[in-house]
Amino acid sequence: MRTTLFKSLYIVLLIGLITFSQNPLFNIFFEFFLLLMTFFSLGRIVINKQIAGFLLVNIIYVFSSFFYSVFFKGDHILDFLLVYKIFFYFFFISFLTGKYFLEKKDFSRFFKIILLIFFIKYLISLLVFNNTRPILFYENNFEIMFLSLLFYLYYILNGKVHFVYQFLLSSIFLISGSRSGLLILFFVLAIVNYRLIIKRIFFIIPIFLSLLFITIFILEQRTGGAPFEIESIDRFKFMLVFIDETKEWSFLKFLIGSDRISALSEGACIELGYYESLFSFKNNGDCYSVILHSYLLRVIYDHGVLGFIFIIGFIYKILRSSGYSYINIIVVLGIVMINGLSVSSFNSIYFILGLLFFIIIKNSKPKIN
Image (cartoon, rainbow, N blue to C red; front, side, top):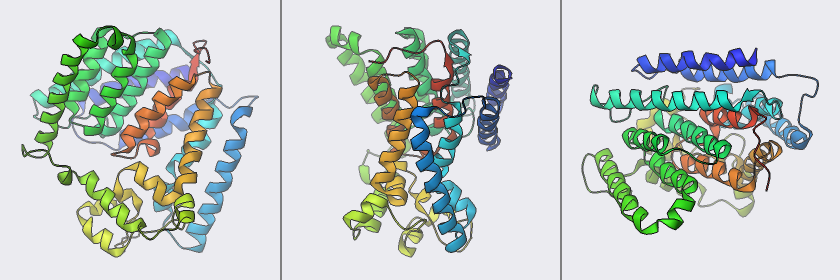
């Protein structure tokens, strides 16, 4: 049944290829896909012993926060779910850890097909519809992070990635117009080509500089052709708001985060009023950390440094118990944290979907070193 469910992803790819408008139904499908995959993976050994402790802490944290926030403070349940999304994902992904069923050849076929579909869709969007921020599913910052995770998993399983696939990936990321995506591209290409870079450093430098100039050009296009200035980046503005909101925090508050869950100040909400669609579901003018976009800012505000360490630790434990090396895990975390500079990264179903592929590959586990 799980294999049949996996094949349903091909149908979604085809729908994404012929759909040229942003559709949240893709997100709903992927979350439903995660739920069904979890349900069909329930077996005799339900939870991997290596992550049982993390899962227990996760459950206690979510339930205690839920009762305090929703029942005691009266926060809207949907605001709570947005802030605690990654912890709910952890619950489901825990039941899938150690349940290997996807063959390497099936994954390799899927990767090659999704890479080609991304390239075709993004190219058509740009050349035919003049869309400088093309999408396959919903939002390209999320989905190209997902694609980069699949790309790196393909590299782990095969020990190399053919130039054609690297070219397609680079083209997709350059067409996407995503700033965080370009950083991920540089990062993941450097990882998979590190041996070649060392051997051909004088040949690689011109290529790197060329990509750098292309990146600067894309950044200027995103600012209407004006010279690139950091003050013009909305994420920089969000960081300034975060700094202003936390400037009087104590060391303890940085460790544990704000009160579960806390709205930003009225001034911050007014300053970021052009993102009104991200305001509280209570429709009372409140706004929460989600409006800061960057998950690295959001997680510190909502869960503190300890909460962030717990998230990193849980992902580390999941991947380590699935047979991946320290280097593999660092790269995965590097990809998602670069994405977290801009958007919700860890809190996105597209990250969890990428993580899912890492833990369900059957009989293809790399040696731990």
